[in-house]
Image 1 (spheres, helix red, strand yellow):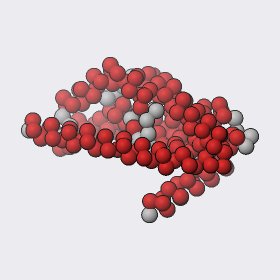
Image 2: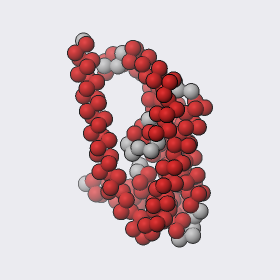
Image 3: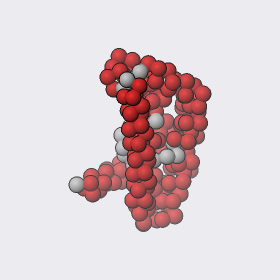
Image 4: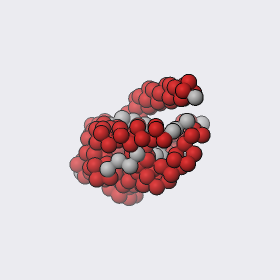
Length: 203
């Protein structure tokens, strides 16, 4: 079943970029950055492969990807600041998120938001979802956009460059990143278990 989903996702990405050119790259990366797990590890290497064939410019591919990341991230940020925060303020206590926790998140993004956004863009899984908590914490919007772009650009450029060098074998990259995805997800699960235990102990 998973193989079927991955195959269908890959074909969707290939068709979209092949038919929409740079716009397709931007749209695909926007979807990924809007908290939808559409793998950039497939999007950008395929675009790099097309660059190797002379259909795209490598820098143009990276810029299209980074701008798409910004667009999708702004959508997720807006959902966080307008809907997510209101939901947590009203129902957070039922999912073990107190107003104190929300205040801590606000302080974190006020102090370290720029670094958190920049480096999260270089991490699988985390890069897909970081915009939502940034919006919930009301991170400075201008800084959010700037660091999203400059964090996404090297990620997009690196993946596209690898795809360009791999040529017809551009799709061999995804399985290696999926293994790294597993590690990231495992860390997140451990952190969530610790968080729940901590709050239940306090209760």
